[in-house]
Length: 300
Ligand SMILES: Nc1nc2c(c(=O)[nH]1)N[C@H]1C(S)=C(S)[C@@H](COP(=O)(O)O)O[C@H]1N2
Ligand SMILES: [Mo]
Image (cartoon, helix red, strand yellow):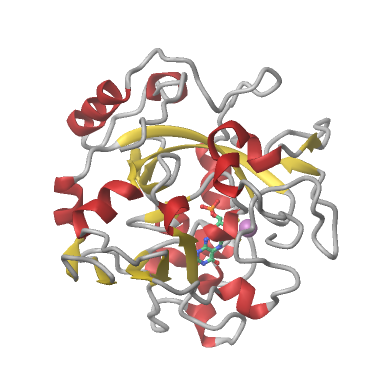
């Protein structure tokens, strides 16, 4: 089992006033993660000052509710998130339908303050709560021969006005290589700022892969499939030339229509300058070895 990744910032640094949802489990998770250890993700010029609740919950991409940045905050409240079930199938020992509460009961929640970089060249810093995807996959029992993990978002047109239009091939689908999925940085988030995930951010649980462009971090997950084939993914199906399967943040590989060398930090204010984008979004030390020997311009 890989060593757990730890933050140097704690939940208390972000929202001292926050009333933590399921505080007991969260604290247990923090203790288990070994507080006070050196932050592997932090760099000198980036104090990981989190964005505000307002910014994170009103400037969103969730095309099932429309393509405008404020559409998710406007319409996603219509999505029913309880009860919620996640089907886990494919190459697993324990396939089946897992209730959200049932999953939570088995998982240890942790606080993770991550950089978040959208492929559109804006970014935020978000304090998540969640559990490592690896823990859930281990619960399901990954079988020999599994090489990839495929994910699907809920598709319920009656509650998701954006899905009445063929903007993407619904349901929204994403995928990871198994080693990426099992990496300790890869999170299934259940909350932000110590509160349950708002619907517009992907309630009740969504993937967070901090070294990849934001569209890999699929929201409101209802299905997880272990497979031996690279799974089809929504943005790659829509435009393979612009959106690769890997989509690792890489300032040296531009999007065909814009540069990826810099980014605009949301909430930076009137005088904010664009800041340089970091290789693997600043998580190079943790994840670069996953891609040893790979041509990252070919597998972009
Ligand atoms: N199901 C689904 N997941 C999604 C998206 C989406 O449209 N539908 N948008 C992606 C994109 S492009 C980004 S940048 C992030 C945005 O997450 P946030 O709104 O919580 O910041 O969600 C990703 N996950
Ligand atoms: Mo994005």
